[in-house]
Each structure stands twice: as structure tokens, then as C-alpha cells.
Length: 264
Figure 1 (spheres, helix red, strand yellow):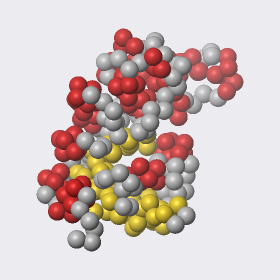
Figure 2 (cartoon, helix red, strand yellow):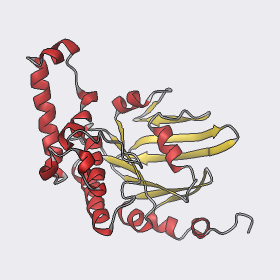
Figure 3 (cartoon, helix red, strand yellow):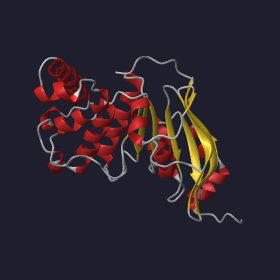
Figure 4 (tube, one colour):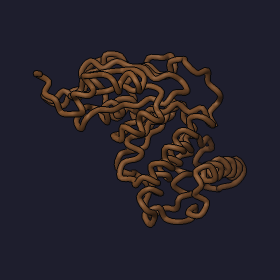
């Protein structure tokens, strides 16, 4: 789906990001990068600032300090739909699908930022609009086949079990053909079999499509198995950054997850 990108180059970099809500400091002077082609995990205990960081990256929050660089350019303050057009897609911790619409139609909404025909042709559904929709539908059908959800393509997603809804949401994000895919707890609430399926799909998206992935995940086994690098947040501060092995052995990370007092 994505054009091939050279691995190892920096795709996104956040520099000295600070974000506050009133007197609450959600993020304090956070800096890290995401390399093209990698799976980058953002982890930390509850309240560490992980979702706030994803919200900064996709334009939902605007930090009081710091910079966001994407694809070699300083990103100005943007709204989420503008960030999406740059090439950043997002799934959410709480599923955000159109429950009354079918799986196919939900995936088609992921193609909206790619549509180019004007409202006149879309209203007529003739000529360019008809051709464009056929092309988008072909892309979506490929994703349906990739995620092995052919049997539910016409099913309203509100009728689907939780794990399958998560898979549909991943499919909608893939439909945008983004350079960077942000996954907010993609395995949350899943049983072991569903987690194994989702892990395989995440790795396949990264490997087959070359999509760069940043994910928040609480399951440390999953994080250590599928991530190339891990950044650890705690109380809005960066605690560690490195390979899974480096992070696993970091005493500050061990203390944070075991609840050891910061004063000890």
C-alpha cells in the first residue's frame, strides 16, 4: 500500500514536548523519534501520559512547548483531519466505529481523505466519481482479504464481537494508506487468541506494507515481542528509551512498574 521507504530514516520526531491542563502536567519536556519502517512502542503505568502523547502526534492536543517534526518538516499547529492528510492514521483505545454501518462501509470511510472528485460528480455518481469509488473499493477489498474478515464484510459492526471490531478499526486505519499508523492499546480487552491474531496482523502490516507503527500497549509480553524500540513514560516524564532488552533491564522501569516510591 505504502510506497517503499528506506528503513532507518527518521519519520517523526517530537522535541521537548510539554503539555499541561490547568495545573496538571501531562507531558514534561519529552523528546524521542520514530524511524521509518519500525514498530515503536510507547509504554508506562496508568497516567504516564501515553495517550496524551499520541493526541499530540495526531493533532488532537496542541502542546504549550516543543516541536513536532514529520517527514523532515516542522509541523505547524494542525487539526486531526489535516494531520491525517499528511499521512498519520489512528486507532483508539475505545473503539470509534460507525456501529450501524457494515464492515465494508466503515472501511470505505477510511478512504475519504483520498477522494478527489468534487461534490457535483459525487452527487451524480457518474464519470470520475464512479471510477474513483471503484478504485477505492478495490483497495478496501484487499484489506478485507488481508485481515481475513470476508465473512463479516456486510455485517453491521455493532453486531460483531469486541475483538473483531478491533480488527475492523485497524482495517479502517489501513484504508487511509498512511505513512505512520498510531495504535492506542490495540489488544486491550482481548483474550489470548485475539491478541495473537492482532499481533500477527500488526507485524504483517509493518512487514508487507512497510508501514511505520507506533503503539501504546499494556501487555509487556506483546511489547517485548513485536517492538523494535520502546520509549517509557512515567508521570509525564521520559523514563527510558531503547531496545526491548535495554528497557527490560532498566532499573527505573522495573521500579515504576512495581510501584516503588520515587523517593527511594
